[in-house]
Every structure is written in structure tokens, then in C-alpha cells.
Amino acid sequence: MGFSNRQEADKTVVEVDESRLDASLATPFRDYIFDLIGQGQKDLIVDLSKVDFMDSSGLGAIVAALKQVGGDGAIQLAGPQKSVHDLFDLTCMDKIFKIHGSVDDALSDSSKH
Image (cartoon, rainbow, N blue to C red; front, side, top):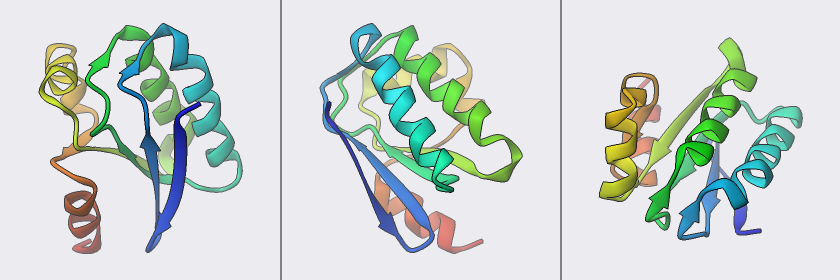
């Protein structure tokens, strides 16, 4: 699967190296994030810059990850292409998730707190 992660300061950056985050990848992606959370990684930035299509399954996986983190951490999104950003706008999930233009923006914003 096309997922990887790296540590940046006190954040875990999860890179989605796929052009689609849809029903075929939603469960493996959710499981990947759940494994990270289970390992104690609870402050995540999900890099969506390579994803040009996301359906409700992909969105559901991200929402499930947010629920799994609960109040102990945060999930921020970085670099979504227009079609993916539009999905978050359309579903009002842009009110739930902090969305940044890039991973660097998310990291610099997080360092201000």
C-alpha cells in the first residue's frame, strides 16, 4: 500500500502515496492510521497532496481515525488538491479538520502553539 510516515518534531506526518483514496484503500488506510495511534502516535498530519480523488470511504477512514485519537491528540490535513478539499467543504468536514496548504504550513502552524 502507498502509505508511509515520518516524525517531524512532535508530529507524525502520514504520507498517502496514492492518487485515489477510495473504497479499495479506505480500510488499509484506516488500519495503518489505527496502528500508528496504537503505537502512541496521536498528533498526526495527513499529507493528501498526491490524492486527486477521494470518495466517502476515504473520508470515512479519516473520520474514524479522528474518533480513534479522541481527545488525546489531533489529526490535521495537509495539501489536499481542489477536488479533495471540495469534498471536505461539501460535507462540512472542513469545520472538523484543520486543513493546511502543505505539510510545512501545518508544521509551522503547530509550532506556534
